[in-house]
Image (tube, rainbow, N blue to C red; front, side, top):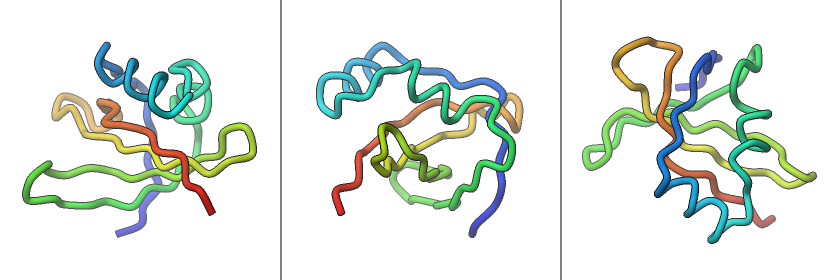
Length: 90
């Protein structure tokens, strides 16, 4: 299901920060700049039996498409945990 979401607060764990930086070359701040407090951010919701409900957002970083996986915190509808960020190689 496609929807627009507002990410007011993005939580990034140390483990995920290391993963996106070391494995995918994405810095936390550049990701925040494209996801946090961006009006009209488009997401596709996915309900995974293994991982639960998550939003998949497509952004552009350095002229490359990146899929960002966000998990609702359950505290506030505008607050998410970063699951990962994956560059898309066309």
